Image (tube, rainbow, N blue to C red; front, side, top):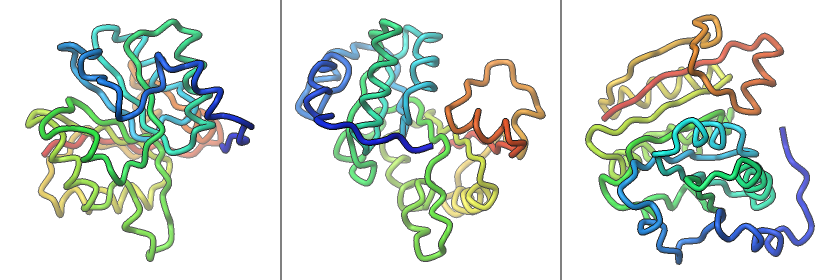
Length: 206
């Protein structure tokens, strides 16, 4: 579900400087003592904006590489008048430069690129090298919530979780069949579930 790149998107993002921040902004002061939940790959912002709306006492940060996608997400955040969401154009490969050790309470990885070719396995956001980074920046009691429509990626991820001795719970290979009442759907989730594709999900702790 790609979004067409917009002209002058970086200039447009300047109109959302209260929402879209960079690493030079002292966002920790803005966060105060709220718990920190981070979404890796925000898409167009449906998930993070709905989640933040339901949880006003939690500080949410969404990371996304594409500026055009961040722009779409920022518009949704502003439409809802949310003050507990910040977005950043950011390469997740460098995530340890953004967060301190034991800083994050929860990470969301929703429908990340499956990189289906074996030679690209190291690019998957659930590859063990990424998991090692997440373990460093998550609090000891922190967790990852992971969802995907790609069964191959999910099976691979379960293997990677085992390699790093993570504790995996709430494993489902068909999330919607379980009918969770508190599930918030992403844009991709709505698309694939409407086509009858099962959604896989699990919770990971280190």
